[in-house]
Image (cartoon, rainbow, N blue to C red; front, top):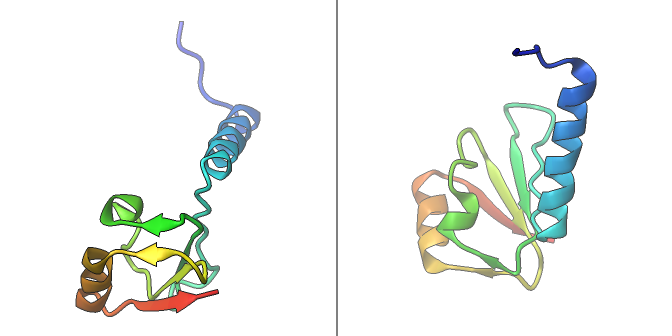
Length: 87
């Protein structure tokens, strides 16, 4: 018997996904406004696989000050006019 998802179950699922991402060192957060959408990635090495499916509508990619950003990522950011910011 299929039961519909309730808000509490959905919240638990979301929290578990966030916990697992943080555990893996992935911190992907979107800014509140769509005009100035920001994607933050805390990986030590940022590859195209890291960003796969996350660049739509993004205007700024924020990475750690010591993160390695691959040339392929830099090319993709340039092609999409996405600013690279180190923090």
